[in-house]
Image 1 (cartoon, rainbow, N blue to C red):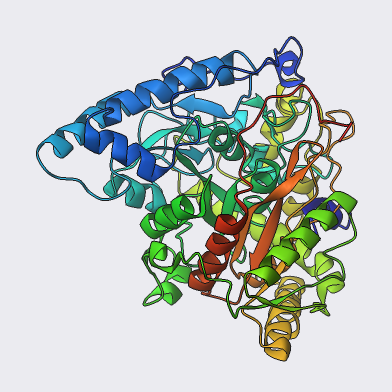
Image 2 (spheres, helix red, strand yellow):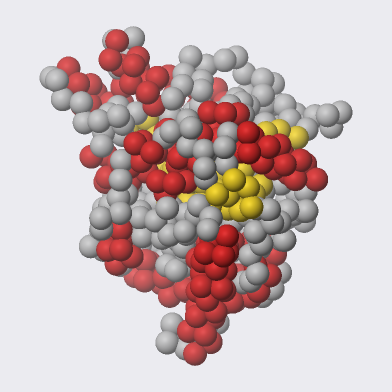
Length: 538
């Protein structure tokens, strides 16, 4: 069940980025001409490393070229608004990494690679962390998120902070994905009037448009895989606990995770390898001990041979004729490359999960956000969810020009996590998603993974009425805390649609093997064309 379904139930950087005005957010006056090809367009991490190894580029020149491209596409031209701000220290960081390379020290495959991270992930530098909200405007965290520290240690350059659906799309039941008060409305580079989905909208658009080599998003339910679907990307929602959540503005600890968003499966494997780790500040990561890998070792072009893949038709097909067509074509590819297709392999509890999930998210959002804000100290702009609600009301013209804060208000009414209603809902979620859900279907059919369409093609952005979700694949894996990878699966009307692989807990090695083999067999990734709208003539 997609976010829209269960909701019905219940400082400026080097380029001088500033919060978009309401008029700009609505898209008035924005150009949509196709920009000229960029020198770094569609280049993989390995391609960029080869350029640096040959001397054709250095980290500094890569940063300069990406910054030029951001200026051309994000601020001007198609006006994508995928970045909230860029890192004013990116060039200085690149210079230090170039000096290391010259001295013979290369930290690994991410050395000197510019990436973008979502603006709900803490960076202790001259960039802010705000979840797209004016509530935290100007706030600079005292420490990097654990995953950011891991990426910096690996040699990655944090190029900037990505726009997002404000507060990770957990503020209003009537929201428009891709909009934040600080960043304005993010635009889909495949059809500029179409939505980017949420909440990792800016990360998806920046990576799809080659404004960064790769990106990091976060997901509670769909916020990595759905934007990746809309932007023709590989998106990885890892097993809960594989990537630390410390230093990330939360929604719900029972479902939150960060993950890679990239143009290739190999780049996703590289990024996840660098991000994963056991963090004393996140108890969930203790379970990852002994289960962390170099995920590139599982990338086998023949990886579909003998794989048993189930097709969960009930509830995960049928909401989009275009997505169904693309999924059927994908199933044919999987069969031709040696996979055993078990069809159907339905999840019996799928329709029951929405209500308890939303109840859990409301309880945990209040508790987890209050805990995050309380740790910020007395200098923080707000210290609680209640403070944020009051701020939004006081600044309604800028914070709520299109939709309100109904979810904030519902969450604020919830009690502590000791309440019986919360504990019962959490128990239901675990039973319905795991033991009676995914675990049951995997065991019954002896499956390596489930395969299905990720989402529908992108809908037309509508700031008046909000999002138009038709359906999607994310909820069951999100609630269970199990891994989910989406890979480009094809196009309908010029709009991308992804194919999803969902597996048991800690099955990332298997999912990478399957996703890579499918990617290599199909090569559906296509650069965006910055069209004014979808190709309705087919």
